[in-house]
Length: 179
Ligand code: IMP
Ligand code: MG
Image (cartoon, rainbow, N blue to C red; front, top):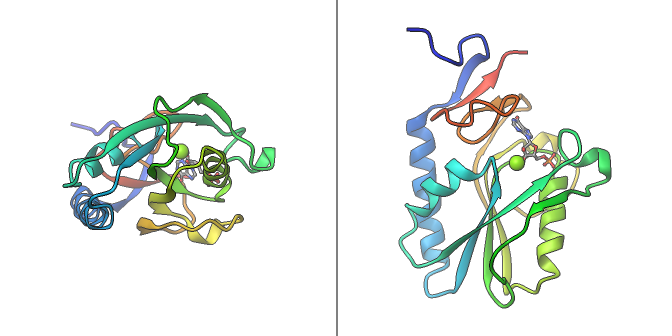
C-alpha cells in the first residue's frame, strides 16, 4: 500500500516517538513552572493544533485553552513588515492572567513578534512562547522563546500540524519536503 505522502516526503526529520517524548517533557516542565497559577494555553490555528492537544494532555495542573487564528501575508509575515491579520480572536479575556502561546514553528519570528505585541496590549500577567520547532538560523526578529521542542535546519517541513499546501497536517511525524 503506498503512503499518501509518497512523492512529497524527502525524509523523516522527527519521528512520532521522538515528538511524543519531547512533548511530554515540555508538558512536565510547564506543569512545574505554572503550578498554582491561573494560566491559559493559546493555540495559534491551524498549525498548533496537534501540538496543543498532545501538550495539554501532558500538563498535570489545571489550565484553560483558547484559540487565535491569524493570516500572514505570503509565507510568513515578512512581506507586510510583520503585520498579520486576526481571523479569529480569543474568546477569553487574558487581563491579569498568565498566557503561553503554543505555535508549530518559528521561522523569521515576525508572526510571533506581532502576536506577542498584540496580546501584550491586553495586559496579561505574563506571556511566554512554546514553539514545537525553531528554524533558528532564519530568525530576523528577536523574540524570547521560553519552551522549544526542537531546533531544526532551514528546510521546508510538514506534518504534525504543519502543512504542505494546506494538506498533511495529520501526519504523526515531521518530514522534510521534496524540493
Ligand atoms: P514567521 O513569521 O516567518 O516566523 O513564520 C511562521 C509561520 O510560517 C509558521 O507559523 C508557519 O505557519 C509558517 N512556516 C514557516 N516555516 C514553515 C515550514 O517549514 N513548514 C510549514 N509552515 C512553515
Ligand atoms: Mg503557523
